[in-house]
Amino acid sequence: MHLNAYYPVDVVNGPGTRCTLFVSGCEHQCKGCYNQSTWRADSGILFTSEIEDQIIADLNCTRIRRQGLSLSGGDPLHPANLDAVLHLLNRVRNECQGKDVWCWTGYRFGQLTTEQQQVTALIDVLIDGKFEQALASPELPWRGSSNQQVITLNCTK
Ligand code: SF4
Image (cartoon, rainbow, N blue to C red):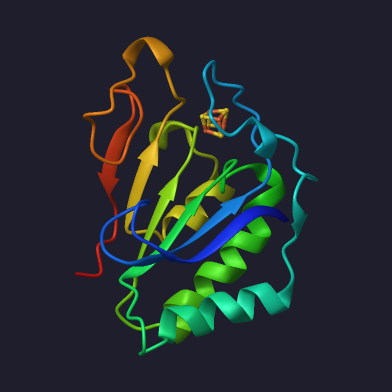
């Protein structure tokens, strides 16, 4: 997996103070996408074990308390990303107690593959669906267009 950006302290992408990872790779090609530089799965930099270790350490940091981890992109559920995201989330669940995980994907929740469902089983809140420019509104909390859903899956709260 490659990543486009990692923000160790983020207050925009999800509730509270969070760590946010923007992965590379997206096949949805939404018209009006604000993140086209992430579409190629090999764009950005390689997601290494050192970066994964840093995310775990940041989530467990007591100096700046994070509510959880946000995964965006690109698409964290792109087939090329599933193994690495699953590995990361298993570590978050095992090593970072009480942290929530939010994930943004262009896939529809009801159409996820078995492999994608293995990842969403470890997610608390999923925002699903392509960005539809005709349905876009800045008023919508956590989503860009009204066709997208904010789905609570496995809330740790
Ligand atoms: S799913 Fe997100 S990153 Fe992918 S094309 Fe659509 S808006 Fe862009």
